[in-house]
Length: 174
Image (cartoon, helix red, strand yellow):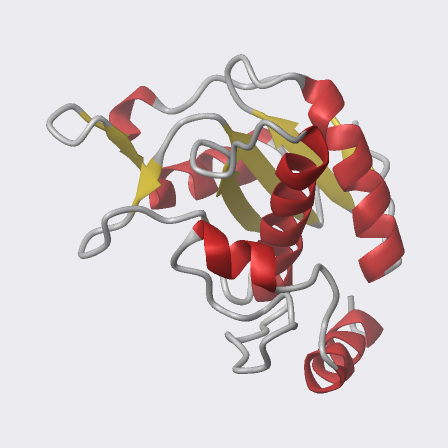
């Protein structure tokens, strides 16, 4: 049984302790409690053997089936993700919806604080999509689209005033 409105799910051998600061960040940014649960195995059917990457969309139904009572569920995986037409994705979410996935495969950095900041930003970004938010053109907004690590590092982990207003409206009916 899950008690928090947001469930954070580590996949495979991702250390669940990495997600505890992310859960605290979800509370700080969204005002929602987040619970870290035990690890889940990546969906084997998602693996594209030629690419050596996993199809991101395959994680979403798995998360929803595994955690049907969760109001929002975000999987965090160490495997590299892709979607057709893209070389890779940092994450993917239903927009709007209940499920999202974030890959840490390309977010690694020798500085643990920078790594954690990247994971928090991408988690907040994908969670924002589950509340119906689109990509934002504001440079510091967490909803800005990132196609490189430099772009992830440049944006903040908070919402710009316009996106914050949209999020607040979505949270009213949450």
